[in-house]
Image (tube, rainbow, N blue to C red; front, side, top):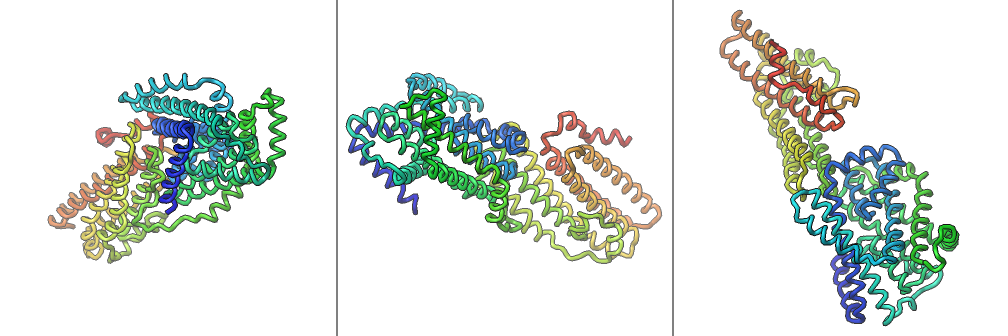
Length: 597
Protein backbone atom coordinates (compact mmCIF):
# COMPACT_ATOMS: atom_id res chain seq x y z
CA UNK A 1 0.00 0.00 0.00
CA UNK A 2 2.82 2.37 0.97
CA UNK A 3 4.65 1.75 -2.30
CA UNK A 4 1.50 2.52 -4.30
CA UNK A 5 1.22 5.91 -2.57
CA UNK A 6 4.97 6.69 -2.52
CA UNK A 7 5.68 6.60 -6.25
CA UNK A 8 2.82 8.94 -7.33
CA UNK A 9 3.74 11.32 -4.49
CA UNK A 10 7.36 11.50 -5.62
CA UNK A 11 6.29 12.07 -9.22
CA UNK A 12 3.97 14.92 -8.16
CA UNK A 13 6.72 16.57 -6.10
CA UNK A 14 9.20 16.30 -8.98
CA UNK A 15 6.69 17.70 -11.46
CA UNK A 16 6.01 20.63 -9.13
CA UNK A 17 9.75 21.25 -8.75
CA UNK A 18 10.27 21.22 -12.52
CA UNK A 19 7.44 23.74 -12.92
CA UNK A 20 8.71 26.06 -10.16
CA UNK A 21 12.35 26.17 -11.25
CA UNK A 22 14.23 25.03 -14.39
CA UNK A 23 17.37 24.76 -12.23
CA UNK A 24 15.66 22.08 -10.16
CA UNK A 25 15.66 19.94 -13.32
CA UNK A 26 19.46 20.07 -13.36
CA UNK A 27 19.68 18.99 -9.72
CA UNK A 28 17.15 16.18 -10.23
CA UNK A 29 18.94 15.04 -13.38
CA UNK A 30 22.22 15.01 -11.46
CA UNK A 31 20.70 12.82 -8.73
CA UNK A 32 19.22 10.47 -11.36
CA UNK A 33 22.53 10.19 -13.23
CA UNK A 34 24.34 9.58 -9.93
CA UNK A 35 21.90 6.81 -8.94
CA UNK A 36 22.22 5.21 -12.39
CA UNK A 37 25.98 5.29 -11.91
CA UNK A 38 25.56 3.50 -8.58
CA UNK A 39 23.50 0.78 -10.25
CA UNK A 40 26.10 0.35 -13.01
CA UNK A 41 28.90 0.22 -10.46
CA UNK A 42 27.07 -2.44 -8.45
CA UNK A 43 26.43 -4.51 -11.60
CA UNK A 44 30.11 -4.26 -12.48
CA UNK A 45 31.25 -5.57 -9.11
CA UNK A 46 28.64 -8.33 -9.21
CA UNK A 47 30.31 -9.58 -12.41
CA UNK A 48 33.33 -10.51 -10.30
CA UNK A 49 31.27 -12.12 -7.55
CA UNK A 50 31.42 -15.68 -8.90
CA UNK A 51 33.92 -17.66 -6.80
CA UNK A 52 35.94 -14.62 -5.79
CA UNK A 53 33.73 -13.37 -2.99
CA UNK A 54 33.47 -16.79 -1.35
CA UNK A 55 37.25 -17.21 -1.28
CA UNK A 56 37.81 -13.69 0.05
CA UNK A 57 35.10 -14.03 2.70
CA UNK A 58 36.43 -17.41 3.78
CA UNK A 59 39.86 -15.90 4.50
CA UNK A 60 38.77 -12.55 5.88
CA UNK A 61 35.94 -13.34 8.28
CA UNK A 62 37.42 -15.89 10.71
CA UNK A 63 38.25 -13.07 13.16
CA UNK A 64 36.28 -9.97 14.08
CA UNK A 65 38.98 -7.52 13.06
CA UNK A 66 39.17 -9.21 9.65
CA UNK A 67 35.40 -8.92 9.17
CA UNK A 68 35.59 -5.26 10.13
CA UNK A 69 38.45 -4.69 7.68
CA UNK A 70 36.58 -6.50 4.90
CA UNK A 71 33.57 -4.23 5.43
CA UNK A 72 35.75 -1.11 5.29
CA UNK A 73 37.72 -2.14 2.20
CA UNK A 74 34.80 -3.59 0.20
CA UNK A 75 32.61 -0.53 0.81
CA UNK A 76 35.48 1.81 -0.05
CA UNK A 77 36.00 -0.01 -3.36
CA UNK A 78 32.35 -0.45 -4.28
CA UNK A 79 31.20 2.87 -2.80
CA UNK A 80 27.95 1.25 -1.73
CA UNK A 81 27.27 0.16 1.83
CA UNK A 82 23.84 -0.99 0.63
CA UNK A 83 25.38 -3.45 -1.84
CA UNK A 84 27.77 -4.74 0.82
CA UNK A 85 24.81 -5.18 3.20
CA UNK A 86 22.78 -7.12 0.61
CA UNK A 87 25.79 -9.32 -0.27
CA UNK A 88 26.43 -10.03 3.42
CA UNK A 89 22.78 -10.94 4.03
CA UNK A 90 22.91 -13.25 1.01
CA UNK A 91 26.07 -15.02 2.21
CA UNK A 92 24.72 -15.24 5.75
CA UNK A 93 21.43 -16.76 4.53
CA UNK A 94 23.37 -19.36 2.55
CA UNK A 95 25.43 -20.34 5.59
CA UNK A 96 28.73 -19.01 4.24
CA UNK A 97 29.06 -16.61 7.19
CA UNK A 98 28.22 -16.67 10.87
CA UNK A 99 26.22 -13.85 12.43
CA UNK A 100 29.13 -12.31 14.35
CA UNK A 101 31.21 -12.06 11.15
CA UNK A 102 28.26 -10.53 9.30
CA UNK A 103 27.80 -7.92 12.03
CA UNK A 104 31.52 -7.12 11.83
CA UNK A 105 31.22 -6.55 8.07
CA UNK A 106 28.25 -4.23 8.59
CA UNK A 107 30.17 -2.21 11.18
CA UNK A 108 33.11 -1.92 8.79
CA UNK A 109 30.80 -0.92 5.93
CA UNK A 110 29.61 2.06 7.95
CA UNK A 111 33.19 3.28 8.26
CA UNK A 112 33.91 2.48 4.61
CA UNK A 113 30.95 4.54 3.44
CA UNK A 114 32.57 7.67 4.91
CA UNK A 115 35.19 7.58 2.14
CA UNK A 116 32.48 8.67 -0.30
CA UNK A 117 32.04 11.96 1.55
CA UNK A 118 35.82 12.53 1.50
CA UNK A 119 36.03 11.83 -2.25
CA UNK A 120 33.18 14.20 -3.09
CA UNK A 121 34.16 16.96 -0.67
CA UNK A 122 37.90 16.73 -1.29
CA UNK A 123 37.98 15.91 -4.99
CA UNK A 124 34.58 16.09 -6.65
CA UNK A 125 33.85 19.71 -5.79
CA UNK A 126 37.35 21.05 -6.32
CA UNK A 127 38.11 19.50 -9.71
CA UNK A 128 36.13 19.61 -12.95
CA UNK A 129 35.30 15.91 -12.71
CA UNK A 130 33.08 15.97 -15.79
CA UNK A 131 36.32 15.98 -17.77
CA UNK A 132 37.16 12.58 -16.24
CA UNK A 133 33.61 11.29 -16.72
CA UNK A 134 33.57 11.46 -20.51
CA UNK A 135 36.61 9.18 -21.19
CA UNK A 136 35.33 6.69 -18.60
CA UNK A 137 31.93 6.54 -20.32
CA UNK A 138 33.53 6.11 -23.76
CA UNK A 139 35.87 3.28 -22.71
CA UNK A 140 33.22 1.75 -20.45
CA UNK A 141 30.60 1.50 -23.21
CA UNK A 142 33.24 0.05 -25.54
CA UNK A 143 34.00 -2.73 -23.05
CA UNK A 144 30.30 -3.46 -22.55
CA UNK A 145 30.13 -4.76 -26.13
CA UNK A 146 32.84 -7.38 -25.46
CA UNK A 147 31.98 -11.04 -24.96
CA UNK A 148 34.22 -11.54 -21.93
CA UNK A 149 32.36 -11.39 -18.63
CA UNK A 150 35.36 -9.71 -16.96
CA UNK A 151 35.56 -7.10 -19.72
CA UNK A 152 31.86 -6.38 -19.31
CA UNK A 153 32.36 -6.09 -15.55
CA UNK A 154 35.16 -3.54 -16.01
CA UNK A 155 32.97 -1.73 -18.54
CA UNK A 156 30.10 -1.45 -16.04
CA UNK A 157 32.51 -0.14 -13.40
CA UNK A 158 33.89 2.52 -15.75
CA UNK A 159 30.39 3.50 -16.88
CA UNK A 160 29.29 3.63 -13.25
CA UNK A 161 32.19 5.86 -12.22
CA UNK A 162 31.58 8.07 -15.25
CA UNK A 163 27.93 8.56 -14.37
CA UNK A 164 28.81 9.13 -10.70
CA UNK A 165 31.19 11.93 -11.67
CA UNK A 166 28.69 13.34 -14.16
CA UNK A 167 25.90 13.25 -11.57
CA UNK A 168 28.04 15.12 -9.02
CA UNK A 169 28.86 17.72 -11.67
CA UNK A 170 25.19 18.33 -12.53
CA UNK A 171 24.16 18.49 -8.87
CA UNK A 172 26.88 21.07 -8.20
CA UNK A 173 25.92 23.10 -11.30
CA UNK A 174 22.25 22.90 -10.40
CA UNK A 175 22.71 24.18 -6.86
CA UNK A 176 25.04 26.96 -8.05
CA UNK A 177 22.38 28.17 -10.52
CA UNK A 178 19.52 27.50 -8.09
CA UNK A 179 20.87 29.88 -5.42
CA UNK A 180 20.53 32.85 -7.81
CA UNK A 181 16.75 32.40 -8.04
CA UNK A 182 15.83 30.64 -4.81
CA UNK A 183 17.63 30.50 -1.45
CA UNK A 184 16.92 27.26 0.41
CA UNK A 185 19.09 28.42 3.31
CA UNK A 186 16.27 30.66 4.53
CA UNK A 187 14.44 27.47 5.57
CA UNK A 188 17.26 26.54 7.96
CA UNK A 189 16.21 25.58 11.48
CA UNK A 190 18.67 26.01 14.34
CA UNK A 191 19.15 23.92 17.47
CA UNK A 192 17.73 20.48 18.25
CA UNK A 193 14.44 21.09 16.37
CA UNK A 194 16.47 21.60 13.19
CA UNK A 195 18.61 18.60 14.04
CA UNK A 196 15.63 16.26 14.27
CA UNK A 197 13.85 17.85 11.30
CA UNK A 198 16.77 17.56 8.89
CA UNK A 199 17.75 14.13 10.21
CA UNK A 200 14.22 13.05 9.29
CA UNK A 201 14.62 14.62 5.84
CA UNK A 202 17.89 12.71 5.43
CA UNK A 203 16.19 9.44 6.38
CA UNK A 204 13.33 10.09 3.95
CA UNK A 205 15.68 11.03 1.09
CA UNK A 206 17.77 7.90 1.62
CA UNK A 207 14.69 5.67 1.78
CA UNK A 208 13.44 7.13 -1.51
CA UNK A 209 16.80 7.00 -3.32
CA UNK A 210 17.94 3.76 -1.66
CA UNK A 211 21.43 5.23 -1.37
CA UNK A 212 23.05 7.07 1.53
CA UNK A 213 25.83 8.04 -0.88
CA UNK A 214 23.34 9.91 -3.06
CA UNK A 215 21.93 11.74 -0.02
CA UNK A 216 25.43 12.63 1.16
CA UNK A 217 26.47 13.92 -2.27
CA UNK A 218 23.28 15.95 -2.49
CA UNK A 219 23.98 17.34 0.99
CA UNK A 220 27.59 18.18 0.23
CA UNK A 221 26.81 19.91 -3.06
CA UNK A 222 23.99 21.90 -1.43
CA UNK A 223 26.33 22.82 1.42
CA UNK A 224 29.03 23.92 -1.03
CA UNK A 225 26.50 26.16 -2.78
CA UNK A 226 25.35 27.65 0.52
CA UNK A 227 21.83 26.26 0.11
CA UNK A 228 21.84 24.64 3.56
CA UNK A 229 23.62 25.53 6.77
CA UNK A 230 26.52 23.52 8.15
CA UNK A 231 24.51 22.37 11.19
CA UNK A 232 21.57 21.23 9.05
CA UNK A 233 24.02 19.48 6.72
CA UNK A 234 25.34 17.45 9.67
CA UNK A 235 21.78 16.45 10.55
CA UNK A 236 21.17 15.31 6.95
CA UNK A 237 24.32 13.17 7.15
CA UNK A 238 23.05 11.55 10.36
CA UNK A 239 19.68 10.89 8.72
CA UNK A 240 21.34 9.38 5.64
CA UNK A 241 23.25 7.00 7.90
CA UNK A 242 20.05 5.80 9.58
CA UNK A 243 18.04 5.68 6.34
CA UNK A 244 20.52 3.36 4.61
CA UNK A 245 19.31 0.50 6.83
CA UNK A 246 16.09 0.34 4.80
CA UNK A 247 17.96 -1.44 1.98
CA UNK A 248 19.19 -4.11 4.38
CA UNK A 249 15.70 -4.48 5.83
CA UNK A 250 14.16 -4.90 2.35
CA UNK A 251 16.91 -7.37 1.41
CA UNK A 252 16.21 -9.42 4.54
CA UNK A 253 12.49 -9.81 3.82
CA UNK A 254 13.18 -12.78 1.55
CA UNK A 255 16.06 -14.08 3.70
CA UNK A 256 15.97 -16.68 6.46
CA UNK A 257 16.27 -15.88 10.15
CA UNK A 258 20.01 -15.22 9.84
CA UNK A 259 19.44 -12.50 7.24
CA UNK A 260 16.75 -10.92 9.40
CA UNK A 261 19.09 -10.92 12.40
CA UNK A 262 21.76 -9.11 10.40
CA UNK A 263 19.30 -6.50 9.12
CA UNK A 264 18.19 -5.91 12.71
CA UNK A 265 21.83 -5.56 13.81
CA UNK A 266 22.36 -3.02 11.04
CA UNK A 267 19.32 -1.04 12.20
CA UNK A 268 20.40 -1.17 15.86
CA UNK A 269 23.92 0.00 15.02
CA UNK A 270 22.81 2.90 12.85
CA UNK A 271 20.10 3.98 15.30
CA UNK A 272 22.53 3.92 18.22
CA UNK A 273 25.15 5.76 16.17
CA UNK A 274 22.59 8.36 15.08
CA UNK A 275 21.36 8.93 18.64
CA UNK A 276 24.94 9.31 19.89
CA UNK A 277 25.66 11.84 17.14
CA UNK A 278 22.51 13.85 17.96
CA UNK A 279 23.01 13.70 21.73
CA UNK A 280 26.62 14.89 21.53
CA UNK A 281 26.31 17.00 18.39
CA UNK A 282 27.93 20.11 19.83
CA UNK A 283 30.79 18.18 21.42
CA UNK A 284 31.38 16.46 18.09
CA UNK A 285 31.28 19.77 16.24
CA UNK A 286 33.97 21.06 18.63
CA UNK A 287 36.01 17.90 17.95
CA UNK A 288 35.62 18.46 14.19
CA UNK A 289 36.94 22.01 14.60
CA UNK A 290 39.94 20.72 16.55
CA UNK A 291 40.69 17.95 14.01
CA UNK A 292 40.24 20.34 11.07
CA UNK A 293 42.66 22.84 12.56
CA UNK A 294 45.31 20.15 13.03
CA UNK A 295 44.99 18.60 9.54
CA UNK A 296 44.91 21.89 7.64
CA UNK A 297 41.23 22.14 6.70
CA UNK A 298 40.21 25.75 6.16
CA UNK A 299 37.85 27.28 8.69
CA UNK A 300 35.16 27.92 6.07
CA UNK A 301 35.55 24.59 4.24
CA UNK A 302 32.32 23.11 5.59
CA UNK A 303 32.16 20.29 3.05
CA UNK A 304 35.40 18.75 4.31
CA UNK A 305 34.30 19.37 7.88
CA UNK A 306 31.13 17.41 7.12
CA UNK A 307 33.33 14.54 5.87
CA UNK A 308 35.32 14.71 9.14
CA UNK A 309 32.07 14.65 11.14
CA UNK A 310 30.69 11.71 9.13
CA UNK A 311 33.84 9.69 9.77
CA UNK A 312 33.98 10.70 13.43
CA UNK A 313 30.48 9.67 14.46
CA UNK A 314 30.62 6.38 12.51
CA UNK A 315 33.95 5.50 14.12
CA UNK A 316 32.58 6.35 17.58
CA UNK A 317 29.56 4.16 16.84
CA UNK A 318 31.82 1.20 15.97
CA UNK A 319 33.95 1.72 19.08
CA UNK A 320 30.82 1.79 21.25
CA UNK A 321 29.19 -1.27 19.67
CA UNK A 322 32.22 -3.55 19.18
CA UNK A 323 32.38 -4.70 22.83
CA UNK A 324 28.64 -5.43 22.68
CA UNK A 325 28.69 -7.69 19.60
CA UNK A 326 28.44 -10.91 21.63
CA UNK A 327 25.44 -9.66 23.57
CA UNK A 328 23.85 -8.25 20.41
CA UNK A 329 24.22 -11.58 18.59
CA UNK A 330 22.71 -13.50 21.52
CA UNK A 331 19.77 -11.10 21.74
CA UNK A 332 19.06 -11.28 18.02
CA UNK A 333 19.26 -15.08 18.02
CA UNK A 334 16.65 -15.06 20.78
CA UNK A 335 14.42 -12.62 18.90
CA UNK A 336 14.51 -14.35 15.50
CA UNK A 337 13.98 -18.07 16.03
CA UNK A 338 14.47 -20.47 13.11
CA UNK A 339 11.12 -21.14 11.47
CA UNK A 340 9.84 -24.68 11.28
CA UNK A 341 10.18 -25.99 7.75
CA UNK A 342 8.17 -28.96 6.48
CA UNK A 343 10.28 -31.90 5.36
CA UNK A 344 9.13 -31.45 1.76
CA UNK A 345 9.67 -27.67 1.66
CA UNK A 346 13.00 -26.06 0.71
CA UNK A 347 14.78 -24.30 3.57
CA UNK A 348 17.70 -22.55 1.87
CA UNK A 349 16.38 -21.70 -1.61
CA UNK A 350 15.33 -18.12 -0.87
CA UNK A 351 15.28 -15.02 -3.05
CA UNK A 352 18.01 -13.52 -0.85
CA UNK A 353 20.61 -16.04 -2.06
CA UNK A 354 19.75 -16.19 -5.75
CA UNK A 355 21.49 -12.90 -6.66
CA UNK A 356 25.06 -14.22 -6.42
CA UNK A 357 26.55 -17.44 -7.83
CA UNK A 358 28.41 -18.38 -4.64
CA UNK A 359 25.41 -18.03 -2.36
CA UNK A 360 23.06 -19.72 -4.82
CA UNK A 361 25.51 -22.61 -5.15
CA UNK A 362 25.85 -23.01 -1.38
CA UNK A 363 22.07 -22.89 -0.95
CA UNK A 364 21.71 -25.70 -3.49
CA UNK A 365 24.40 -27.71 -1.69
CA UNK A 366 22.66 -27.27 1.66
CA UNK A 367 19.35 -28.31 0.14
CA UNK A 368 21.03 -31.32 -1.49
CA UNK A 369 22.28 -32.34 1.97
CA UNK A 370 18.65 -32.26 3.11
CA UNK A 371 17.80 -34.59 0.20
CA UNK A 372 20.58 -36.88 1.42
CA UNK A 373 19.17 -36.84 4.96
CA UNK A 374 15.78 -37.93 3.60
CA UNK A 375 17.47 -40.54 1.41
CA UNK A 376 19.13 -42.06 4.47
CA UNK A 377 15.75 -42.48 6.14
CA UNK A 378 14.15 -43.98 3.04
CA UNK A 379 16.96 -46.47 2.36
CA UNK A 380 17.09 -47.48 6.02
CA UNK A 381 13.35 -48.19 5.85
CA UNK A 382 13.73 -50.19 2.63
CA UNK A 383 16.46 -52.32 4.21
CA UNK A 384 14.33 -52.98 7.30
CA UNK A 385 16.27 -50.87 9.78
CA UNK A 386 15.64 -47.68 11.71
CA UNK A 387 17.60 -44.57 10.80
CA UNK A 388 19.09 -44.45 14.30
CA UNK A 389 20.40 -48.01 13.89
CA UNK A 390 22.06 -47.24 10.56
CA UNK A 391 23.68 -44.01 11.78
CA UNK A 392 25.08 -45.47 15.01
CA UNK A 393 27.32 -48.32 16.17
CA UNK A 394 24.42 -50.80 16.26
CA UNK A 395 25.33 -54.34 15.18
CA UNK A 396 23.19 -54.45 12.04
CA UNK A 397 24.05 -58.08 11.29
CA UNK A 398 22.61 -59.13 14.65
CA UNK A 399 19.49 -57.04 14.07
CA UNK A 400 19.01 -58.57 10.61
CA UNK A 401 19.49 -62.09 11.94
CA UNK A 402 16.80 -61.53 14.57
CA UNK A 403 14.22 -60.25 12.08
CA UNK A 404 11.73 -62.70 10.61
CA UNK A 405 9.58 -59.94 9.13
CA UNK A 406 10.61 -56.47 8.00
CA UNK A 407 8.79 -53.39 9.34
CA UNK A 408 6.17 -52.03 6.95
CA UNK A 409 7.55 -49.30 4.74
CA UNK A 410 6.06 -47.57 1.67
CA UNK A 411 9.06 -46.45 -0.39
CA UNK A 412 6.93 -44.80 -3.08
CA UNK A 413 5.06 -42.64 -0.57
CA UNK A 414 8.28 -41.66 1.22
CA UNK A 415 9.93 -40.68 -2.06
CA UNK A 416 6.91 -38.65 -3.24
CA UNK A 417 6.56 -36.85 0.09
CA UNK A 418 10.20 -36.17 0.99
CA UNK A 419 12.69 -36.37 -1.87
CA UNK A 420 10.78 -35.50 -5.02
CA UNK A 421 9.49 -32.07 -3.80
CA UNK A 422 12.98 -30.96 -2.76
CA UNK A 423 14.58 -32.21 -5.97
CA UNK A 424 11.91 -30.37 -7.97
CA UNK A 425 12.52 -27.20 -5.95
CA UNK A 426 16.26 -27.40 -6.67
CA UNK A 427 15.68 -27.75 -10.41
CA UNK A 428 13.19 -24.85 -10.36
CA UNK A 429 15.65 -22.71 -8.39
CA UNK A 430 18.35 -23.35 -11.00
CA UNK A 431 16.02 -22.25 -13.79
CA UNK A 432 15.21 -19.02 -11.90
CA UNK A 433 18.83 -17.98 -11.43
CA UNK A 434 19.07 -14.70 -13.32
CA UNK A 435 22.78 -14.84 -14.13
CA UNK A 436 25.18 -16.80 -16.29
CA UNK A 437 27.04 -19.44 -14.33
CA UNK A 438 30.79 -19.10 -14.61
CA UNK A 439 32.97 -22.12 -15.37
CA UNK A 440 33.59 -22.96 -11.72
CA UNK A 441 29.95 -22.71 -10.73
CA UNK A 442 28.84 -24.57 -13.87
CA UNK A 443 30.94 -27.57 -12.84
CA UNK A 444 29.69 -27.47 -9.26
CA UNK A 445 26.06 -27.14 -10.37
CA UNK A 446 26.46 -30.11 -12.72
CA UNK A 447 27.90 -32.20 -9.86
CA UNK A 448 25.14 -31.22 -7.44
CA UNK A 449 22.43 -31.97 -9.98
CA UNK A 450 24.14 -35.31 -10.58
CA UNK A 451 24.30 -35.98 -6.82
CA UNK A 452 20.54 -35.49 -6.53
CA UNK A 453 19.93 -37.76 -9.52
CA UNK A 454 22.22 -40.43 -8.03
CA UNK A 455 20.17 -40.42 -4.82
CA UNK A 456 16.93 -40.70 -6.77
CA UNK A 457 18.38 -43.61 -8.81
CA UNK A 458 19.57 -45.31 -5.61
CA UNK A 459 16.09 -45.09 -4.08
CA UNK A 460 14.46 -46.45 -7.23
CA UNK A 461 16.95 -49.32 -7.43
CA UNK A 462 16.39 -50.15 -3.75
CA UNK A 463 12.65 -50.33 -4.42
CA UNK A 464 13.26 -53.39 -6.62
CA UNK A 465 15.02 -55.09 -3.70
CA UNK A 466 12.27 -54.55 -1.15
CA UNK A 467 9.92 -57.40 -2.11
CA UNK A 468 12.65 -60.05 -2.15
CA UNK A 469 14.15 -58.69 1.09
CA UNK A 470 10.77 -59.25 2.76
CA UNK A 471 10.52 -62.74 1.28
CA UNK A 472 14.05 -63.65 2.36
CA UNK A 473 13.50 -62.45 5.93
CA UNK A 474 10.62 -64.93 6.35
CA UNK A 475 12.26 -67.75 4.32
CA UNK A 476 13.25 -71.09 5.82
CA UNK A 477 16.14 -71.29 3.35
CA UNK A 478 19.06 -70.13 5.50
CA UNK A 479 21.28 -69.51 2.49
CA UNK A 480 18.67 -67.19 0.99
CA UNK A 481 18.26 -65.34 4.33
CA UNK A 482 22.01 -65.05 4.81
CA UNK A 483 22.67 -63.61 1.33
CA UNK A 484 19.87 -61.04 1.47
CA UNK A 485 20.68 -60.09 5.07
CA UNK A 486 24.29 -59.56 4.10
CA UNK A 487 23.20 -57.42 1.14
CA UNK A 488 21.03 -55.07 3.21
CA UNK A 489 23.58 -54.91 6.03
CA UNK A 490 26.43 -53.99 3.67
CA UNK A 491 24.35 -51.29 1.95
CA UNK A 492 23.39 -49.86 5.34
CA UNK A 493 27.03 -49.89 6.46
CA UNK A 494 27.84 -47.95 3.29
CA UNK A 495 25.41 -45.24 4.40
CA UNK A 496 27.13 -45.22 7.81
CA UNK A 497 30.55 -44.77 6.21
CA UNK A 498 29.29 -42.01 3.93
CA UNK A 499 27.99 -40.16 6.99
CA UNK A 500 31.45 -40.52 8.57
CA UNK A 501 33.01 -39.08 5.42
CA UNK A 502 30.50 -36.22 5.55
CA UNK A 503 31.58 -35.30 9.07
CA UNK A 504 35.30 -35.96 8.50
CA UNK A 505 37.66 -33.26 9.73
CA UNK A 506 39.88 -31.24 7.43
CA UNK A 507 42.89 -33.41 8.43
CA UNK A 508 41.26 -36.59 7.13
CA UNK A 509 41.17 -37.51 3.45
CA UNK A 510 37.69 -38.43 2.19
CA UNK A 511 39.23 -39.24 -1.19
CA UNK A 512 40.98 -42.31 0.19
CA UNK A 513 37.81 -43.36 2.03
CA UNK A 514 35.82 -43.33 -1.20
CA UNK A 515 38.46 -45.39 -3.00
CA UNK A 516 38.28 -47.84 -0.10
CA UNK A 517 34.51 -48.11 -0.59
CA UNK A 518 34.92 -48.76 -4.31
CA UNK A 519 37.36 -51.56 -3.57
CA UNK A 520 34.88 -53.02 -1.06
CA UNK A 521 32.17 -53.08 -3.77
CA UNK A 522 34.40 -55.07 -6.11
CA UNK A 523 35.33 -57.44 -3.29
CA UNK A 524 31.66 -57.98 -2.43
CA UNK A 525 30.90 -58.80 -6.06
CA UNK A 526 33.66 -61.39 -6.20
CA UNK A 527 32.60 -62.95 -2.89
CA UNK A 528 28.95 -63.01 -3.98
CA UNK A 529 29.73 -64.71 -7.31
CA UNK A 530 31.89 -67.34 -5.59
CA UNK A 531 29.21 -67.98 -2.99
CA UNK A 532 26.47 -68.35 -5.61
CA UNK A 533 28.52 -70.82 -7.60
CA UNK A 534 29.20 -72.90 -4.49
CA UNK A 535 25.54 -72.76 -3.34
CA UNK A 536 24.31 -73.94 -6.75
CA UNK A 537 26.87 -76.75 -6.86
CA UNK A 538 25.88 -77.94 -3.38
CA UNK A 539 22.11 -77.59 -4.13
CA UNK A 540 21.60 -75.09 -1.27
CA UNK A 541 19.67 -72.84 -3.68
CA UNK A 542 17.66 -73.50 -6.81
CA UNK A 543 18.47 -72.14 -10.23
CA UNK A 544 15.37 -69.91 -10.08
CA UNK A 545 16.49 -68.43 -6.76
CA UNK A 546 20.00 -67.94 -8.12
CA UNK A 547 18.62 -65.85 -11.00
CA UNK A 548 16.67 -63.70 -8.52
CA UNK A 549 19.77 -63.28 -6.38
CA UNK A 550 21.85 -62.25 -9.39
CA UNK A 551 19.26 -59.70 -10.45
CA UNK A 552 19.02 -58.31 -6.93
CA UNK A 553 22.79 -58.26 -6.69
CA UNK A 554 22.84 -55.97 -9.71
CA UNK A 555 20.31 -53.68 -8.01
CA UNK A 556 22.43 -53.72 -4.86
CA UNK A 557 25.55 -52.85 -6.85
CA UNK A 558 23.67 -50.00 -8.50
CA UNK A 559 22.60 -48.61 -5.10
CA UNK A 560 26.17 -48.96 -3.80
CA UNK A 561 27.73 -47.32 -6.87
CA UNK A 562 25.20 -44.45 -7.00
CA UNK A 563 25.71 -43.64 -3.33
CA UNK A 564 29.50 -43.64 -3.64
CA UNK A 565 29.26 -41.34 -6.67
CA UNK A 566 26.95 -39.09 -4.66
CA UNK A 567 29.49 -39.04 -1.82
CA UNK A 568 32.29 -38.04 -4.17
CA UNK A 569 30.18 -35.17 -5.50
CA UNK A 570 28.66 -33.91 -2.27
CA UNK A 571 31.37 -34.58 0.29
CA UNK A 572 34.62 -34.38 -1.70
CA UNK A 573 34.21 -31.98 -4.61
CA UNK A 574 32.73 -29.37 -2.28
CA UNK A 575 35.97 -29.33 -0.29
CA UNK A 576 37.80 -26.80 -2.43
CA UNK A 577 40.77 -26.86 -0.08
CA UNK A 578 41.67 -30.25 -1.54
CA UNK A 579 44.71 -29.91 -3.73
CA UNK A 580 44.70 -31.01 -7.35
CA UNK A 581 47.12 -33.76 -6.38
CA UNK A 582 44.63 -35.11 -3.83
CA UNK A 583 41.85 -35.12 -6.41
CA UNK A 584 44.04 -37.08 -8.79
CA UNK A 585 44.33 -39.79 -6.12
CA UNK A 586 40.72 -40.81 -6.90
CA UNK A 587 40.97 -44.13 -8.70
CA UNK A 588 39.21 -44.80 -11.96
CA UNK A 589 37.27 -47.99 -12.66
CA UNK A 590 40.14 -49.36 -14.78
CA UNK A 591 42.62 -48.71 -11.97
CA UNK A 592 40.35 -50.48 -9.49
CA UNK A 593 40.19 -53.51 -11.78
CA UNK A 594 43.97 -53.51 -12.11
CA UNK A 595 44.35 -53.55 -8.31
CA UNK A 596 42.16 -56.66 -8.13
CA UNK A 597 44.14 -58.62 -10.71
